[in-house]
Length: 196
Image 1 (cartoon, one colour):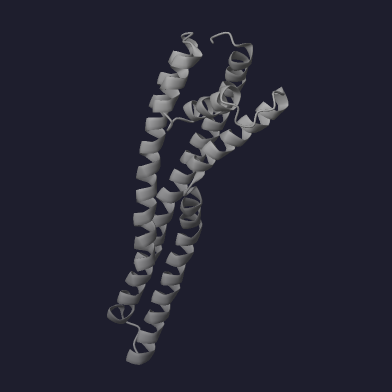
Image 2 (image 1 turned 90 degrees about the vertical axis):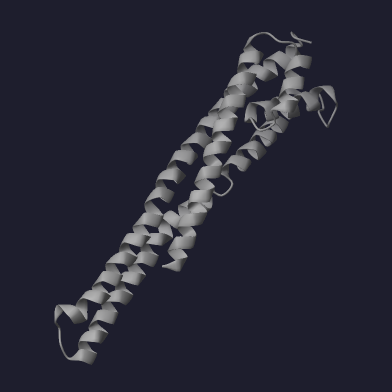
């Protein structure tokens, strides 16, 4: 049961952190995209991206700008730039996927830990019956109650973790699509030099 409590506490901490990370990211991304679509020049976009590195679109713009204008390994070909941008996008998404595997593990393992507690509680009930040589409710009830509590604890740890895992995985996928759309727009703007 202690293991389930630890799993649950860590899961809730991850859920809270992820929630606030995604909330901040959404706000910063929206502000940057509004500026990006307003026709602001590259220098202004760069200044804003530098202050909002928590948003993936800002991080992608910042890194791409550095590649193109500061000469960090860009050979000049569009394909090389796309590869570099793809690598940056992958790194940014990796930050959002961090700790999601723990939620998936808790969601998968906790019911089994609870089930183990259930089996243990039922075995304890049978042991009590054998020692008392009686199968009355007073002998059986404590072990059965312990078994049911273990089952419930496993589900209480697993259900929120699975829901959060699926929710945040959806948010990561949405962020990936947002980065892909933005990368196309940004590459066109940076390569054309239309806002230099």
